[in-house]
Amino acid sequence: MPQSPRAGREGDVLAVVSQSGATVSFFDVASDQHLDTVEVTCSPHELCFDPTERLLWCTTAYESGYYHANSGRRTELTVIDADTRRVVEVIDLAPEHGPHGLALDTTRRRLYVSVEGSADRPGGVVVIDTGTRRPLGRIDTDAPGPHWFVTDPSGRTGYAANKEAPFVSVVDLERGVLTAKVEVPGSEGIAVSRDGAHVYVAAPYVGSFEPGAAERPPTGIRVIDARTHAVVATLPTEDIVLPVHMTSTGKLLVGEMRGAFDPASALGRHAPGGLTVFSAGTHQRLGQLEVGLCPLTISSSPDGRIGYVACVASSTVDIVDLDTLRGIGRLDIAKRDDAGAHGLAYIPRPA
Image 1 (cartoon, one colour):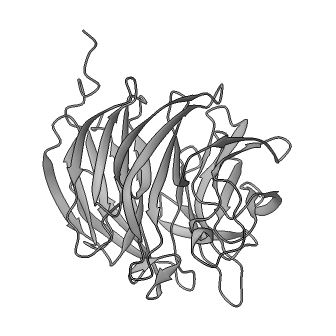
Image 2 (cartoon, rainbow, N blue to C red):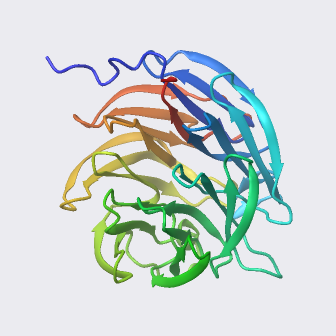
């Protein structure tokens, strides 16, 4: 009988943001037992675990709400000790605001944080020294709303998905400059293949599906050749995609949102979403399974055997065996209004 994907994970922890709960909750990976909850600044969004410093970084983008419907932009990053589960520091990035996407380079000890533009500057990426926890500078992306940000395996190139701008921004991280724009419809989640040869970006932007929007391009994952900066293929999806994630084993995990726009709710009306899995190597669709309402963030275990899908409208995290593509658990995340589970981070036990 195949060994359970949970086997041997005692001491590993999953951290989950509750956006309206303004918390980060910690769960035992082997048993799903709730271990602790840490209160953070209002409306937290994404998480990133630094295994060198054993710190958890959390962005706070807005007073409340989302990119397309919020009550004001925030400027904070919260730093949490992953083992004691206590807040170490709250870093104010002002005048930068709307921090959202996080990408870590452990070799150079750099954290990249996407921030939104304003009247006097475009959106960009703030560069932080993870040792001193202080900003080193920023890289412009020439777009108002860079949201998700990823780096290639070499740590030399970064890619920003831009919600309204019709391109993906390509930046040289060593020189700190924008080097290319890859034409795609306004984009959502973004991921890079393990060899750095291709970039996968979800398009179009979910806001283009509201009533009155212009003619919409087909949904799917645009595949970008990292060498030529050209779209070379599209992986079709049935529904609009927000999150994408690349596992260590080369599986591309895609969260499809199903439902309808509702002017009475920032989240809309949702049916159960879908987790679709592609092979990054062959672009073959490997399968799909049903998950909670409005999948917004996806992560996986370091060995690529377990997937985690945070669904913000149902405020749940679906736990998936990625070998069999079957659900093996679901976490319920406390919330205060309609915005629940969001950012995720897998924290291996200390060596």
